[in-house]
Length: 351
Image (cartoon, rainbow, N blue to C red; front, top):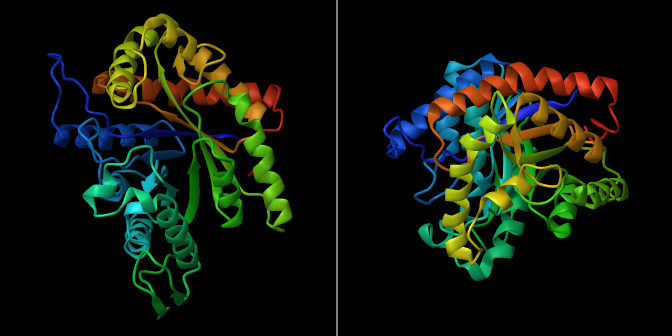
């Protein structure tokens, strides 16, 4: 099976030509244009993250995805991720079933607990219920995926008694679980029969091989068919390595330092950046050849079915993001396929 290449974005607030931050509204319109270009250059998937903080403009991914659906033909449309813990599974399913109808079957959803906690107080949830919220709501959502009347009872929302949910999709809704580094989450994805999306944002890809093996063992033990595994990692493509590094570094530094001040990380610097973009780092930043070689190596190492590059990190400008997307589709994608045809390794074995 051919490795699919996708793109993810959180709608990072970007800078205009004068260096000032653009509005949330303009950032969202730019994301739609970026997705249209991704469709035109043959990218398989676009994922929009859900966040509720000043760094990112997208709080309602499915609305932006519906706008993208109206202007695209082939690209599949999903999230990266949907914060299930602070949403209602029934309403969430209805929204994505609607998106699936608008897009003629192109909707996907990647469910996760999220890496930020702003949505919990915003929507009236207690952080002390972090685990039970996700487990109960995930159980209900996977029942809804069957598109049959549901009877369900838990502690996090009202019970359902033979409740039917609409609209129905034409061919079902594809769903994944996004996992950052928890073995329990890997087993949970297998137990619920959902695809596994590994968020690799630090360190080499090969350290996630045990999670891939655990997922396969869990599916086998459960008597399930093999399900797809994907990888989400940050990146940026330029004509040369040096150009890509110079374009990407300010945004990486800005975003890492913003989050780092909240979480007690040391200041980001050039030495850390050069490690991140190197062979042992999780950032896919460089020329088309450099990025393609690194993606192909990750695919061989983990046997994945899809690689999603998180193409915006910090306030990099819209024009540079558009160039990165164009290079990713026109030069990285065919080069990755060429490399894997020469030496495929286990790629696609998880599909």
